[in-house]
Length: 123
Image (cartoon, rainbow, N blue to C red; front, side):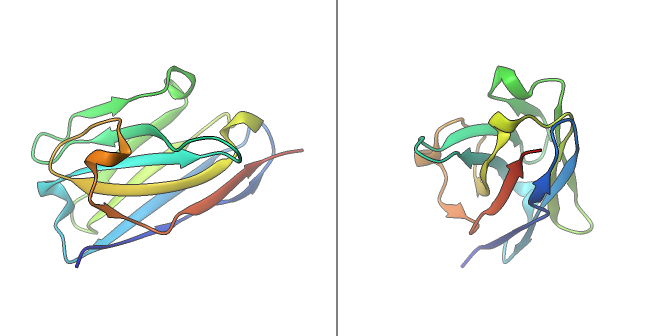
């Protein structure tokens, strides 16, 4: 069974940065797509970004994060990262990583999920 563990969440002031990590076991992440989703209070879970397996092509699904968030992967550590800069209060959410065969912005397309990590942006 695939296991994904997110780390790196926390409380940060607006304009600050965080780097989330998604470490995997029982799956080789560079063979699969890995995505970051987030769910804000009272809202549906939404796709944020994805990095494809093999080609490592990156996708950003929310216009609000383009230019501020960067997804990357360390194949040696079998870990995917989400570098988040210039954080805004509207980025406050639980962030989840998920993996499956192809990148997609839809949560129903992913079969394996982590438990999530809380990101709170507040002064």
